[in-house]
Image 1 (tube, rainbow, N blue to C red):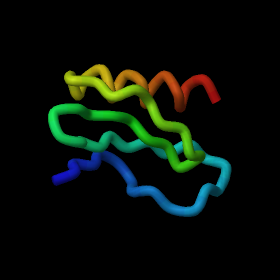
Image 2 (cartoon, rainbow, N blue to C red):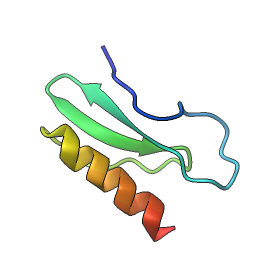
Image 3 (cartoon, helix red, strand yellow):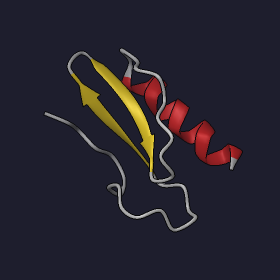
Image 4 (tube, rainbow, N blue to C red):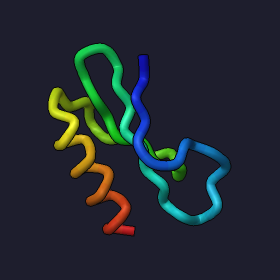
Length: 57
């Protein structure tokens, strides 16, 4: 079952809204712009990927 944090994905409106999603033993970050981070075993690393993506925009 997927676990999401923050707002869910929707139509891209120019703002970068990120979520983390669990896929099996891995967690990855996603953004409403279509960006996807690498699969991580640690949720904290996926959250860091999402924060870095949002800050870089």
